[in-house]
Amino acid sequence: MIIIHAMNKQPLPRHLQEALAERLHVMPAVVVIGARQTGKSTLVRELTPGERRFLSLDDLDVADLARRDPETLVGGSTPIVLDEIQREPELLSAVKRAIDGHRRRGQFLLTSSANLLLMQRVSESLAGRASYLTLWPMTRREQMGLGRCGLWEKLLLTRDRNWLDVLRSEQSPPEDWRALARRGGFPTPAVHMKTQAERAVWFEGYVRTYLERDLQALSAISALPDFRRLMRAASLRLGQLVNQTELSRDVALPQPTVHRYLNLLETSFLLVRVLAYSVNRTKRLIKTPKLYWGDVGLGLHLAGLPELGGAYLENILLNDLMCWRDGRTEQTEILYWRTTTGEEVDFVIETGGRLLPIEIKATSRPRLADARTLRSFRAEYGKTSRAGLLLHTGETLQWLAPDVLAAPWWSVC
Image 1: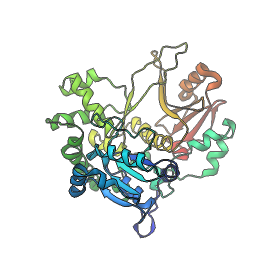
Image 2: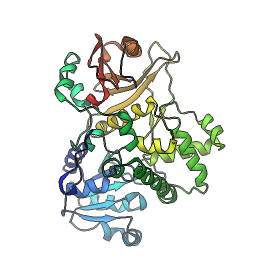
Image 3: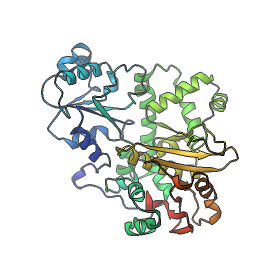
Image 4: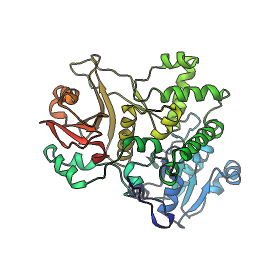
């Protein structure tokens, strides 16, 4: 695949830009959250260049003023960007007072490398005053310079029987999913680095910075080798059910410690737990969440595996789905479905009262047998379910069954 670089080294457009601009016209504050190095600072700078004061809490002088005189820092009529607000969460109280004193749309644009809603030290969430948006690592189509994620919206807005026409009209170029997994979605290694050796150096530096600096801003962790060991153990369980007892045994840590460490990884957007679809029907369902990484390239680096299993392809599709979901205004859930008898559908999109089941196979020759669990899901939920999508690594684009469309993963993602 050829990655399209913007002219004059301008940042590539992001899918979230439109949603961010829309919400700045509605709410007094918008908070862009996401892992370090996903491009949050670049996104907010490019959206309103020269129109806002840009203040980063990574700057020691700014952080000191935030502690000593927060009212002065957030005061004035000029719109403000407060970058890395999680470093001084008490500043949120000053932002709240400023909003309540003179409510102006789009006055505050905040970024955070931690989920403020999950941080124990954050007492002020700006409820009713702020809209939250999550910026995930770059999708495949963002890396291509298209500024968007996959075709999920088009498929939802199109009748099932017309899906084939939608995918044929797109003419998306094929790609080796393993190459995409290895470079991940962080802009620097994904777009600006050419070799895997360069990316390995970058990922290692990222992990060290996270452990030695960013993590300490969230929680005091004295045993960093233990935490890193847990990160690797979690990366080796990509796409599996989260079993904290097994993790505790494998890394020789108490289960409460494993639980706390996993929560910290999730708060940092490095770990993603996909919940089970839990509507009680005639079959007994598994309720334990499945584990994935916020960036598939980072997860692969931590695992240190020479060969990639199909779970990494699942992770690529999940990252794309999360990017699409978090740019929408309509409530949307990305779930999975699994029964106690072993039937499983990798992902289920739940939105607008309907379900879209998606199965992912790392095979170039999809067969009717691969659609078995999709058809079982549809039989279970009837008219609530849309037709099933079977995404694979080959070139087949056809209906395997009247209710299951087989499509190359790259034609959708």
